[in-house]
Length: 520
Image 1 (tube, rainbow, N blue to C red):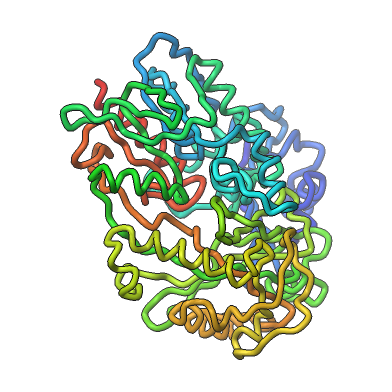
Image 2: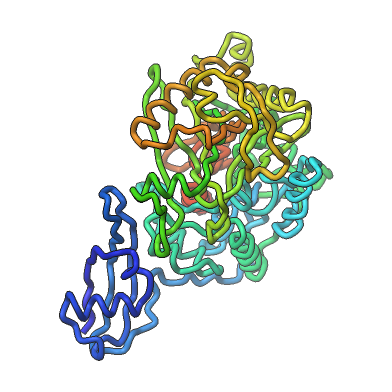
């Protein structure tokens, strides 16, 4: 007999299969000798009460051998040599999943990536950290895997209405990710493991007859009779076919190219602020309601805060327990930070973006002159200001959290995970006032909700600006093609239709399906 059960158990009970079987025998009256196997289907932590519990959904095999059934069946990718082809510009999650879906649909993908492969890219990211040298084509934003490859690999999403989250997670597992991501409420691969998964996806594309071209930056769309028929790269090479444009939220040169080509664009809201870093033990103590922290059986604790300040949202973004703050710069004379966590989430620090929602009408008049590019120029201006305030280096400006709220200069900034280093800086004074004021009020609200959160043991590090695309490329909601140009499929975060790895992957698949429908 196979029985499915829902349990609420102590974290120790959930820590191993032997402990689960012991619990089933004691409380569910299932003899241990009859249990042939237990498969965990879903797992989540409930820390709302003082006694933290783990919710488990189990499949228990009683007097029946445990089968090797897949939680999500693998996909068969067949050869597409000699098939009709399509161009995929960008190799982040949107582009990767678009290419894989094209193969499923019998279309040969030609993937063009401006940066380097995920292995070489690691070297360039390390140079940014250790030497302050930024390759504008290979960094934390550009290269195989996109911005998510070396900035955490979190797979949690609320975009469940647009497509199958389980399908996306299953494809990650098929390419080497742990099966745990199909089980955990907040799945996470980790920046140390995700590059191997990305490489396996590339190998699937190549094995099936697709093409992958690195260091191939697209500089022009080829348009004939009001339809996109291909692209041209910086080297002058041209590729023919309909185009899925999945260039990510940091490709400002692509936005400028589209603007100069009279492609329809819309300014959209973004969120900007700082990266907030606490010692992980403080977050564990707060979230698990214990001075002892998480103990032996619980993972590094997460948090999620949101409030309204002066009619705009202030919220945590991309929370990285047991993680590191990294320089997410993609060009010269700018400074922007992001966060990442390894798979074990084992560092001494917890960090999160703490950002303020902005609408185009919130910007000063000096930026409104840029029209649809106003938000993009505002982002870049904040990053240039942060670089100047850091003495034209990547040693980021930092301020103790309570000092930031109280409007005081900080002394003796605590140690940070940010490898280039941090230095004392009055972020409360040089951040745009409509950002700094809302952050201060937001921090006060979060400190009231979580005692101990507002502390001078935490530091704010500036600046966090790359939360989402500053533009949207309008498209038909049904067919997903560009409303004025046939053959162009704006995709993922860069097009303004996604906000993370999973939602970008889902959007990539939808764009591939729309392209295939147009081909037919």
